[in-house]
Length: 128
Image (cartoon, rainbow, N blue to C red; front, side, top):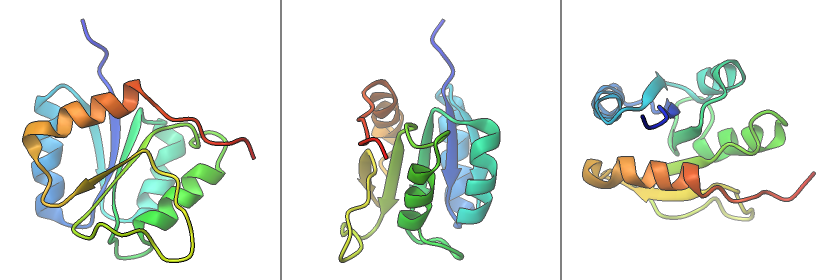
């Protein structure tokens, strides 16, 4: 039996959260979905998911900032982070360390495979 991977999915769009959560659950993932970056940060240390799926545009702090905070925490820095957005640009003036970028609209036909690939082929962040 294949391992059931856990995803922490952060997206403020309720329709997207319901759709993606249902689809990924159907694909065999355990999905925890939240609407804000702070909710994701609060839940992250509690569940220690196998991967983070994070929207760039969140109502409180943006997805890039969420990733920076997760990367600064010992317990979450090595967990793969997937960011998604309708925009394909990073914030100006800094390099944000994430594992994979997915453009919107998300292609649900390939999403599960992309997530599995990132989990199974994590990159290594430099030690701090």
